[in-house]
Length: 277
Image 1 (cartoon, rainbow, N blue to C red):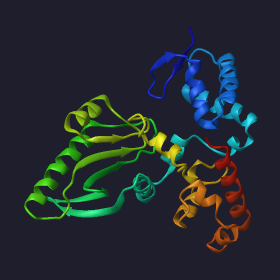
Image 2: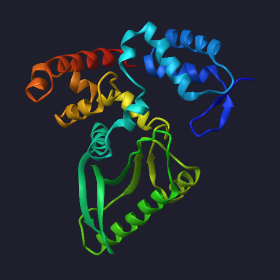
Image 3: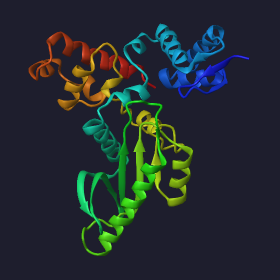
């Protein structure tokens, strides 16, 4: 039996259906995913890492859809964003796509102390306190202490509201992260009613599913450009592939990017966006 080494060092049996699903998320074509998954199955060996399998999937998928060669994995692209302001801004935009009105970076007086709140999201009578947790290591987990802190903050904010110290009647808390929660953190969140928006849960509203649904792909998904250049693009106001693909290269040049780089960025953004699921 061929086993695969996961990012945390644990092993699991190789499953072609997982490779198929991964490739399908990358290219959106069942035919390509079937062909790639079968070729990967023929190449894998016992002890191969999931990272190597993912690289293999991208290389093989690019033979069918060349634009894939210009992009990296979405999960990795999120980890390459700067925690502040990029990822927080990304989450705020996502809530706006979900129909919320958003306020960011608030200092709110609780009953005991002031709290810095990443995002408050408003829709109807609902007020969601969003704690944003970003990790540069995409396989790192959010620990129990983070969720405990969110719950304690919520209690202090609610008591502060009851005492008239601020005007936000918070309905519920939510932790938004580009990674996953530990088992204990997930169990505590469920027990306390802390909503979760993680990489792969909850089903139907996970971070990955929402980004694909709204085609909100960060510009850090592009390969072939250094991070300094991509951060400059974000600072210019082009956070997503769609925004960059619709940009005028001359406008990017006027803001400080070399003309050739600006042209390639816009060109590659358009090609990659067209090839996304």
